[in-house]
Amino acid sequence: MGETHERILLVASVATVTVLVAVYALLRTRPDYEWPTSLLAMVPGWLWPIAPLVLGVWAALAHAWALTGLNGAALILSTFLLAGLTVPGTAPPTADASPLLRIATWNVRYEDGHADAIETKLLGFAPDIICLQESHREAFDDLLPGWHRAAVDDVPEHGIRIFSRYPIAHAETVGPAGDELRPSLICTITTPHGPLTVASVHLAASHAVARVRETCGLSRMLADGALARRRQVQALLAALPDDHPFVVAGDHNAQPVTALYRTLARRMTDAFAVSGLGFGYSLLAKDRLPVGRIDYIWCGNGVRPVRCRVGHSCPSDHRPVVADVLVPVPAAERAKLPSAGDLAAAQGAP
View 1 (cartoon, helix red, strand yellow):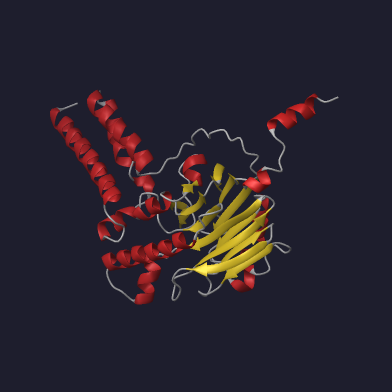
View 2: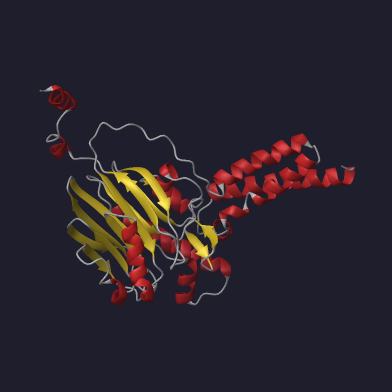
């Protein structure tokens, strides 16, 4: 490789690493409502590893092994830290006879004409609890006959719903509402092993807030959206129980690199982050091109995710997220369960 090409490769590699480090540091240290952070958080995650991948291949072909290693390290770090690649960890063993529940969440993009197809796909997941967003009242009120249900339709065409195989003992809405600000729907579901609180949420999109307020300018639009989501999350966290298990599921309009995500992660466990495999991108542009992971299932107060996956999007521009979770058994219920010694004695009995 000529000296000029080697210098270009060196400058490009150092510049790429510097930019990636600066982007990560900015996203980790600055609030979402500052426009540079909000703008960077909207970048599709898969874009970040492209530059180090190309430069790494170039360096390898040129036998510039130091630069190959530098770009290789940048590729690995950007793939995990910025692109969001997830590798499931080893789940710790549990001594509890915890029941396994399957939770599904899906922003169905008010696809009124495809309610039957959506119902068929949802039933194909064999879920116990379903959270829907952008579910128009006329089309989705009749979904899943025989299931227990709760809904909030404060914002036209952006209804939020919860369907459950088990009885819903209580339902309420929390958070700001109006224009395109959707309150969160929180239900207490009576499962066979005790109460489980489930929240279906749809946090504000920046462009929607800007459209309602008729603001001009990208920076103002991003700041307004981030602040609206922050207020919604504050109200949600204040309403979640401290004394029994809960699950929060829905469209957050925020990627894992945001401060909003870290706020939620301090209180709950992201099911896909600990039990999913891959990037889990749930939002598609033009229904085809992956944009980012903005749909989540969160677990709190002892609920433990064991598997999480992202399904196919059609007919929505979002992919459904499905998680199997272990729900802790209350002490009163656990006392009724046979002990390990009882089971061993029963197995050894004639």
